[in-house]
Image (cartoon, rainbow, N blue to C red):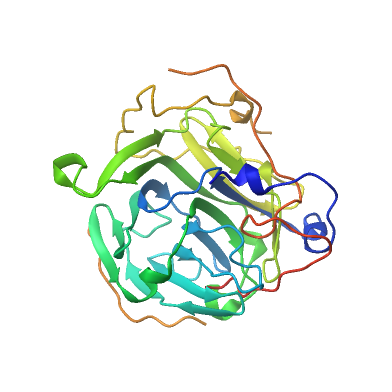
Length: 330
């Protein structure tokens, strides 16, 4: 399912109108396509100051709409108050009555101090989380059976207004940045993958340029979030995709891209779709049920796609003057 098929043009009000009313700017990157099952890996150095959320997650568009439809989501979230761990979670149920299963996992070096390879595997029978190739959690049955339909891959950087969840926010510590070196997506092919695995590599993105046929840039906000998510805080520089959290009006990245000691994976022409050069810019309360330790050929560029005020917090179309009030601390 392609997210473009559910986005329509026109003026919207209500929640979308908030998308220029806040004092801070964050960012959200999302795949234009959704997937039914698969494996997803990203090599990242996460952002973290108290009060923030730096994430990678799978999400079914429209889950947050309270009309009886199911909520479908799988999370990796680094909470700013404790960047030496991340929170894994499955969210099912319905908007306003979500079922969650949070667990926390230690990471060394801390998530904001070094690059790590984060992985999500989603099959009909289990969801599995890995860091640097090490399994830190595997959930079978239960909520997994409620993950019906498709999900897109997303990354975002924002600030929650709930200090019990993420800590007290200090704007004097801004700006902060989440660095994504590469992303891999695998199809679910039971027993037919490499060495008999259940996954076959579909595509790799090294972010040498911004691939507008694969990715969209969020431009929205939601209740409980003190930032507006904006396309102005997503950058591609030196083979790195950068998400920023800044003060409003100070959207930029003028710093040094951190070095990742792991070489980037090879990208074949079949997995590197047409890219956009327009983003190669010159820049002016949650419980923990367990803790797991973790060891240390391009086509003609096309303009980047940015969706302005037609979708809400996680991608669903905003209808008329509705506002969705959802607890996004999960």
